[in-house]
Length: 532
Image (cartoon, rainbow, N blue to C red):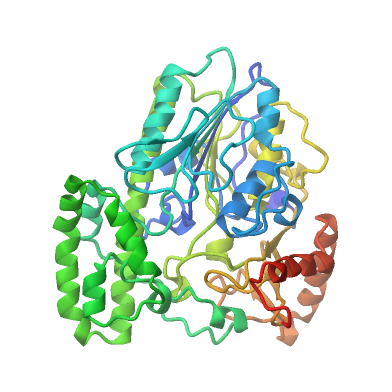
């Protein structure tokens, strides 16, 4: 089934624009599509992010090529799969010889700026101005790397990133040039520290539990059973759930490592005295109540408590993102910039909000594989459009280049979304997308795997220390609870998908030889033993 059958609403006609469009690329970190009310309003309302969908197009099958932060960002910048640009995980460096689409737009006359979290590299290529967080950055009183020297700015990071962005618009934007702006939020990345206005509100809320919170993984393979992402077992009560280390130790709670205690102390230590007082006024009573309840908690009770604490803080950080997206959207409207500006909202990948008992990402399973994608461009896109085709973060670079009438390099591997945005879905040719995850052994211990995903099915091969295949019927089993790879009824589907996967591996220049190459790099660094 080709893409044309999946487009639910058509777009405006494809008239040629007189002016090249401005581009505002908004990306948050680990923002689950389930936590955007344009997708699902069960957990939170995000009216400002939803505005982008209401005024543009909502993609329901957008995905990433590798569900982990830095590789995803490198793919967005280069339009290449991770094995091609070299940033296969958060460990190995990005190959700086890669050409990025901001460089090409800058060379073509665009004014370019980046504010927020890049996650890798201190000198983003192709930007006239940048102020970026070092590595993961901090929620409170963050440091910034700039092209004029490093600085610390007091306050809350989501508000600060927006302040920097609006200051650039007011004081340094060149009105004679089109602009390309990267507006990149740290939130809602772990360890989920909301602003005071939001933790005062969200810590009082109770959220519905996902149906698979207590998943036992019976219908899945080894990888799901051995991953270290379970909320009860692997989420720390100190760094993640905000229980003071001295209380956690007094209660005899065994943390996965000292990491949780150390991170809490580090983040709490960044607060000013006034910020500590505000924090303690809310989280102090939570700690005292937990101290009373914990001795009588069952494992199930503890899981439920940790889930609520997780949601309160995670969603609290998203509330600030939504407010600040609203500030930027209002600015564009009030200054006459909205009509000829492409506004994109996305995340570097999806995230688990208790589904399968998990937090974090990494797997090809939907909650981590899929990512939010909302695009508005009033001159092109019909308001309220919805699109179900398989698109990826791999496609952003070529989309922006085509929109700006800049030729994309031949080695980019994505497919421009312009036909979908302009109401020409018949020009879209992709039926399945390719995924490959590498960071194993590593944080959360999600095994290496690659696969193909279509609108109907998902086929994945887990390799290195195991050799297992998984197939999921995405229409009949949307929660991905039942691996039907060995079901005779799906024998033909398996055969067809394996052939398509083989062709995708060839098309994107991936191979078993490259699989072994990256395994050997882990061996060379002592990350894995040579005898495995």
